[in-house]
Image 1 (cartoon, rainbow, N blue to C red):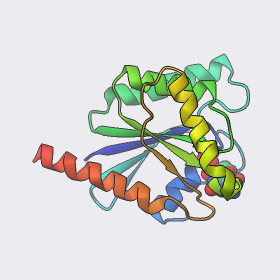
Image 2: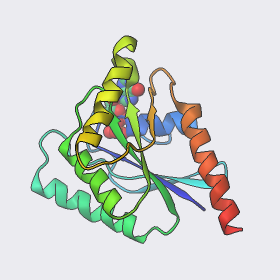
Image 3: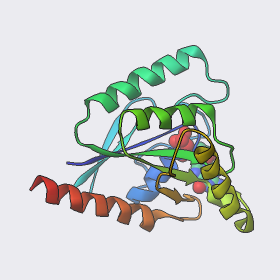
Length: 182
Ligand code: GDP
């Protein structure tokens, strides 16, 4: 079955997003404590795809040790999983592009792993500032090493925003996937 990997800095709102997508409250434990999602968890959704919950990486200052652990788990996962069709890189919509996120997106690009960006916590920004904030973020990718912006989604787990868009995006990829493999 096709797999979709969800990844981001600790505290970005990954557990909350996963709970919003699956509609199950107790699935992924949320907490204010960074670094709580430790292992790689697979959730089977609708019987036809896997949501893969990867450990959160480097919060606050990224220590060398953190970075090593992150790289080991994440690169091992990405290198082994043949069924991975798309990675979702979660970023807090309030924040400037973070070096570790940019580095990770570059790494995905170099390894030809398709990915999309999920902006989280959209409810924490004034609606009138939201579009510009997202535009600025994407522009910084273009100013950096990217020639085009990846697909992106603006979400809020608190306000239940972006769920349908994300699920229908995944559904679209799944349909192509099953066409190609049948
Ligand atoms: P994780 O470490 O990436 O899994 O992040 P969590 O899902 O545990 O969320 C970290 C913190 O951010 C928690 O206090 C959540 O309640 C909060 N949070 C997560 N998503 C949202 C959101 O969409 N809006 C708001 N306002 N807070 C959020």
